[in-house]
Image 1 (cartoon, rainbow, N blue to C red):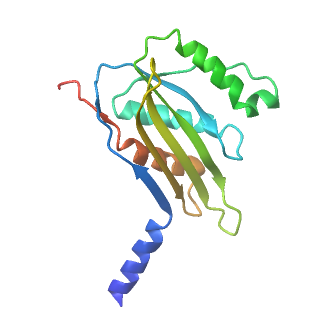
Image 2: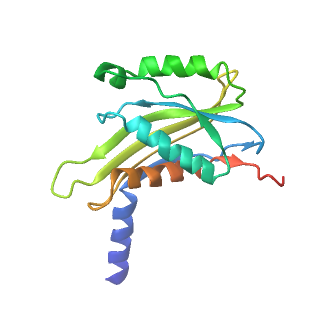
Image 3: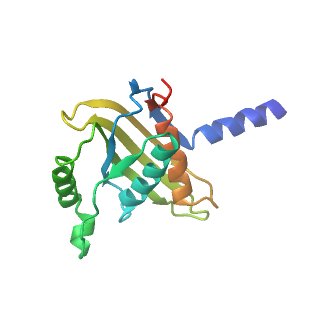
Length: 174
């Protein structure tokens, strides 16, 4: 009976998340990186900006110091909700930067589910590209539903950390 309960618990826990993460080739430790705007496909305004901040700190923890595109001076709701103006401004900025790789992607989900517990739900896709050619070197996607007392940003940290586990960067000593 105890084994059955353990197996049922494991199946329940594994059903709460889904990840597609492949290991990347090894990126040189001395390469320069930029975080470009994530597309916000979620129904939560500014979800992409929240995920970008978490992404920045998670990359730093892996030894990647990435510069971030400059914030735009959004002064109306349309500017905040329209990704295209931000993307265009960031691409113009990127053309002036001595960057080897860019990391970008999208936020598919970033909200609390409705219902009694209101569990957080996060879905993110990340991609590493060459800053010059646009060639894609690595992609990963994942989603996770958290527990009733967990925050959306806490769930976002877990998803981004799991996605970045496939990103390999040479150590400074290599």
